[in-house]
Length: 119
Image (cartoon, rainbow, N blue to C red):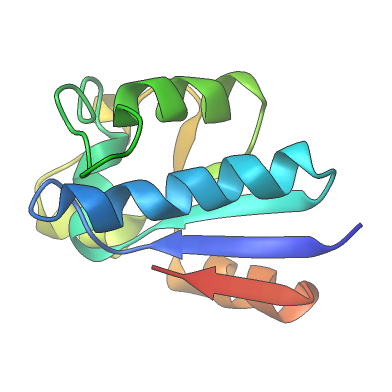
């Protein structure tokens, strides 16, 4: 079993790229790996309540289905606090299960894990 930090930076502006880290997080979890899922930059909008509604990449599952699966599996969903605040997103705006974390938390998580994937 490996330990991953999987990071996404694309939001509703690029539905296909926004979906890939969700797919990777789910796949890693289902393979028995430990995952922390980190959203930064434009991707933070996806952590908002209903933020994934209607988002679907080309030939990919609806992001809402993937997001619900990830949250129900208990995969930690961390949202870059600086990125969220810059977009006027507060912690109360986030889906249940998503939490704001700082860059220091992200760097520490990456340092403690064997693998980091970024999309």
